[in-house]
Every structure is written in C-alpha cells, then in structure tokens.
Image (cartoon, rainbow, N blue to C red; front, top):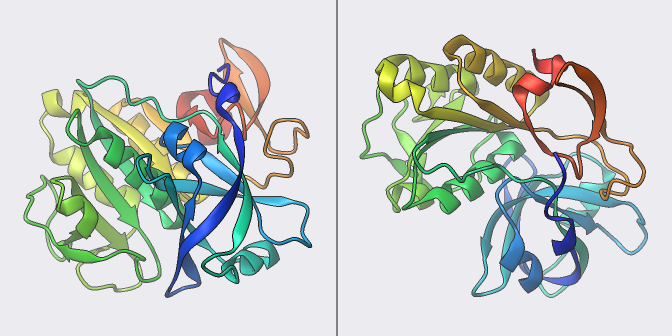
Length: 290
C-alpha cells in the first residue's frame, strides 16, 4: 500500500473561477490549479484552507480535472463551520490548496467492467473515474442522494439490465458521452429509483449473466452505512470491491496519524492512514466492513 504519488503533491494558490450553489447546501467550485489538474487521479482529494483565519484545511474529493485548461472541479456540502466558510468564497478569490493527495482507484485493467457507486458528496470520485475510463473500459455509474442532485439530468437512452420502473434519469454530462448512469433516492425525486443506491446497483448486478458479472469490479465512495451496504453486495456476488473512505483529517499529509483505520493484511493487524495510505482500500482488508 505504499503511496506512489507522494512526489506529485503541490501547494498552489488556487483561483476560484466559478462557485455555484445548489439545493441542500451543495456547492460546485471550479478553481485554477494547473499542477494538480495535470497529476490528479480518480479517488484523490485536495486539502483546502477555507479562510485566512482557519489554519486547519478541509479535504474535498476531486470531481473532474481539465489538464489543458488547468482547472479542478470540486463538489462539497456545507455541513460545518469550515465548509460554510468555504462556501463564502467568491469568484476571483484565492484558496491555498494542497493536492492531489492519496492513493487513487486502480483503473488499469481495461478488461473489467467498473461499477461505480457514489452517495452524496461521494459522487464526485465516481464521476472522475467514469471520465478517466471513458473510451477505454466499460463502466456504469449509480449515484444516490437525499436532496436534489447538483448536476443537469436527462432521461437516459441506455438500457441497463435489472433497472426498471421510475429510474429513467441519468447525469447529462455522462449520458452525452455514452456513459450509462442511474440515480437513486429515498426523497421521492422524479426519475430516480426509490431506495438506497447500493440496492439499485445490486439489481443491476443480479440481472447480468454469470459471465458478465464476473468481469465487474465495485468502486464506491459515500457515507459509512452506504459503504457497508456496498461491501455486502460485493461479498454476495464475490466481486472485488474498493471503498474510498471519508474521515476527519487534520494535516492531510500523514504526519498527525489522526485518520487511521484498522486493516488486516496477510493475517496481520495494521493501522493505515486514510489520507496517504488511502483513501481507497480494498474492502476485504477492512474488518469494519467485513
């Protein structure tokens, strides 16, 4: 689990280019950070200083990058004092940023079908992964939210096995590039599967042939209860499952060891730092999700 990306960490003065408010205290921020944009991989995050008065930074998952334009897109929810301060940043402001940080998802096996399952602010790494996989490997995105999705949506023209009823909407930016997606919610949102997003993914997997299902790899990011459900789906179908953990972080660089998680590796109990040894871990290594 050695981090191969530690030599590609940059400190940049990220200029806010756009900052859009969405329902449910959700915000999409685009910043100019060319070094991070050039090196970031799906599953990695950045550590932002939310204000001049706040020394501690906040970890935010990367949703998309544009290396040519040098931009990084971030989706976050204002749920604490730090992220509320971040939400007050205006276009033209400069946000001190460290990134990209952490071990990304392994998307190297192009013979696999990647099933990407995101919930809430865990959706961004799935969008980043789908963008990376587009044109070179099969993937499908399942996204869940209990508030309105902070993306443009449209009816999907792609049929997916096991997906019936009201689940007709897809994320427009993915649909337009031929990447299949479906949405889930318990909030009665139009066009969404009524229920939790891991159950939507399970319906899809159950409808595949044994041969097609054996090609699948599950990648997920979201709240811990959702990750537990995804891990159960992975065990049910005996599929490789990788989880991106969300933890409170102080330094974000591995020095404080304030975000450790227990793993069992080759029968040996170890403690790994989510910020630099993760945030992506194989579910089988995490006793919490066993």
